[in-house]
Length: 516
Image (cartoon, rainbow, N blue to C red; front, side, top):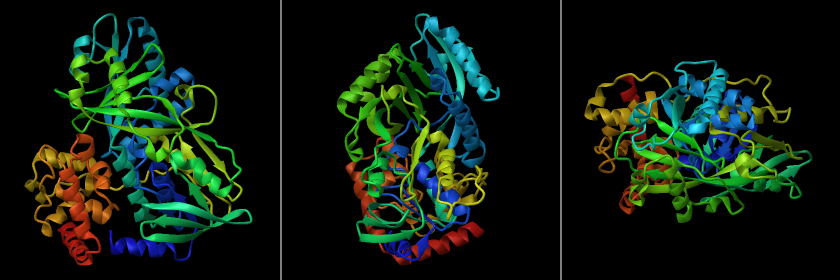
């Protein structure tokens, strides 16, 4: 980011911010967005990349949580269903799209399955299309490798799929466009405490330290929640525990038209979700007490999940040769006894002696309400007088308009870009005027183009090749994270560092492009 990052770091050290948000995942980004829209002076920082931890390691689903009916958490399910529909219809329809699910139920569970789907539909206001049972032939049309033998029943209901990293990034972008000062790769290392408040936070980055003066702090660091809380109060008791979950990325032979979910005999919940021409198989549930930065999908985790999935997918779908990659993430759950599998998926929050608001957990789907709850706990001196859930659209959410330069790209590439950038797809086309390869594919077989790389560096705070590969494009998910791709993108990052002339040329190009 060169000089632009230098300017951001300088701005962080100037004046006093009303709110400093530590943690740039989906919740922290939303806190910053809503606070900035309310007129507060806001800074948002993350110790790594935006959406680089829990927010970027999900099942890529926006859903009500059918399985939570089994624990009686009807309030959470109803809330999540409302949020799913708001995100898919108003807030981010380009990133949150309807996705049919096939629910597989063992022979003796058809009645229980039907009752659960009826309650689920009722909580959703009986929106159409309603859940329904389907024949084995229709089930395998939707999910070709599905096992349909025996007395199993299959029902279809509807949720939504998303690109979790892009959703988090769009939220951070919305915060920045609303006036928030945002910077990644800045880690909180110290807090200065005044009586009853935090007056300053020291951040450490690759460039050195920067001290940010602020009136209030929101701790939205996910798995690092209690670590930051201890900076405020070294004697505080932990309020969170961590659960590790992995996903295995598989390469299918045929097109999947739906996702599939199943509950196993021992109470676990497995699913397989089509995403970017790949299948996400999930998930595991294992208590984790290690360094959050070191969480990883181990070979034994992958083998275990592939073995369990044989209960509902044919063996040929689960061969090791089909495994593209695997990733692990950490759920933040309330401290308590018993297995993490049965722990509440509602969020947790606390206010420390210095007034720091700490919030974590919950679901990706309900991140807007979690952020609103955090803002309601701000100290009186900065809390906005009016707080309500806003359906303000994220960047790219407006209807897509056809533009002439799209003819340079094939239809599948245009569709791919519109799924990621929505109505802002045209902004990427401006890079062609100063980079002749902007509309060329990065890797054969992947729809991502070089304009996405340039846009990630210029507009989306990408500082490393990993930022681009795993969180700005779909290269990582598709398995195109080769040393050659890393090297090519790293070379672009290096050549653009501090290149102010190129940035000015691009700004002029965009002005012309958008005024055409």
